[in-house]
Amino acid sequence: MYRKKLIFWSACAGIVMFGAAVMTLGAILPDLRDKLGLTDLSAGTLFSVLPIGMLTGALFFGPVADRYGYKVLLAVSCFLMFAGFEGIATTSSKGLITFFVYLSGCGGGAINGSTSALVSDITENDKGAKLSLLGFFFGVGALGMPLILGILKPWLSFEQILTIVGGFTLVTGIAYLFIKFPEPKQPFGFPLSSGLGLLKDKVLLAIAFFLFLQSSFEGLFNNWTTSYAIGTLSASQSHALFALSSYAGGMTLMRLLIGSLFAKTAPKNLLYSSFAMIAAGLILIRTDSNFYLALSGFVLTGAGLAAGFPIMLGFIGARHPSLSGTAFSIAFAVALIGNMLINYIMGIIAGLYGIRHLITIASIELLLMIVLSTVILNGLFRKGQ
Image (cartoon, rainbow, N blue to C red; front, side, top):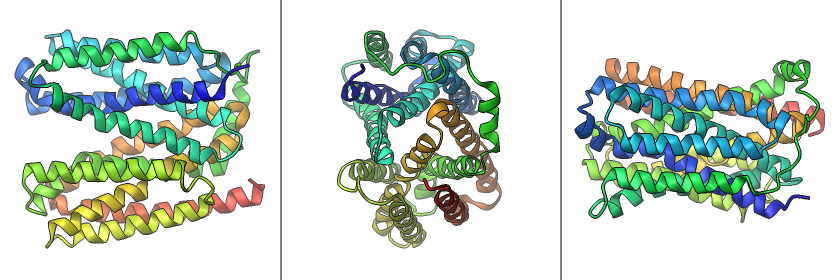
């Protein structure tokens, strides 16, 4: 028998590493520019390679987890992240840096999806609450990496810091090899017809496209908040970074609350309360006459976005327990495609019409998310889930 608490905390350790990996590239980009002589074009290429790697990891983790279990999958994913961290820290080649960024993205994408599927598998009730706690630890890693770089920068080079962080991913991967995980759900061969049959599940597809919007919404604010604060709110660079930290902090804190204080709250109530917070946040951000009002809007928007992924992934895990990994793969792959596509469109719109339309796109996405959530909840209700 496996120990659920040990598995949960091991999943949290993995997602912390993924959070650190997601934030690493942006945090060290100025140092990489100086070290490798990167242009804006080559820096942009690195930013596009990371989500491609994450998409690769998202596509393969599910069928592998269902067929072979989680132990080797999680360990190999950590080793890929370790190779990515160490490669980024040591290479002086522009070509190789792209490869190592891809490796870290691939390992991170697999860790992100597989830890979520694993926590769903070992949780009988309140899956959304447990997945929200897992999301909180992603926030710990994402917020912690820039903080570690800032604190240690006077004493250590960014290469040394990356080497140390990479060492933690290696240790985490080795630890996975000594933990007892649940047995594979499909030990006698992957049922291809059943896996393909998931694509006919209209509720699953609706959830996947909800996460398409959710992921792209999060990506818009991760990538464009500082530009919006500087260009529209006339904020300084330090204030713009504070706005980004406030948004991320709001999301991280709310995921902790959903996983603890609001663990027994009905998912429907959480979702619609979250939509109200997002709407209020966008209104406050749009009142650009006062930076501090806008700042509270960023906090509210981050808090409102906190529930989407945990609740929807909890629905998937309950709906497809025998193929949870594959179902999660579908959802994460669609979500990552949304993140890349909508952020690319935002870049075009910002160039042509201005960064102020960040709120316009976010508002349209919010309306579509409300519509899709109604469709999803109605579909689950008809199925008695």
